[in-house]
Image 1 (cartoon, rainbow, N blue to C red):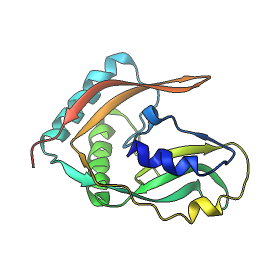
Image 2 (cartoon, rainbow, N blue to C red):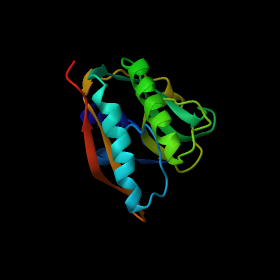
Image 3 (cartoon, rainbow, N blue to C red):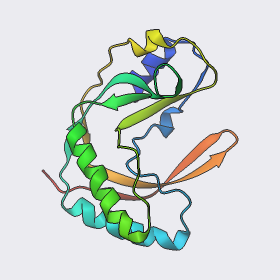
Image 4 (tube, rainbow, N blue to C red):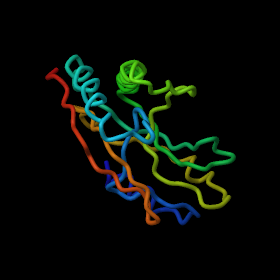
Length: 167
């Protein structure tokens, strides 16, 4: 997947900050600032959810932007195969964390992989017109990350991994 995304971005010289390869991820729930003592209760919820989750296949396809392609601030690749499964997983995480005081996301969940942040306006039509479809890969776990913002960009540190049941 990483090589495929890298090949796409090398074709263009847009005014964007490309997400570093090691930072590519699909966010299911952004938790914001979390005190260290709360990590275990979050992990407990994720452990419970993963017990009934099965591995599934996922592919990435199509390139788009938030808030829109006319006025992009974030460029992403969407989820094709596995879309229903990832949405269901996100809903379960959302429901599981609500009793812990985490607010439900008001916007609908749009599964995507952020690949770039736009620095200034430009014509991205050629990028958005690209037809893209990744190879299929296996989703077999969820990882809880700690993110630390630095002047050079975010640093993601895995705190715990929650493997799914066998199919």
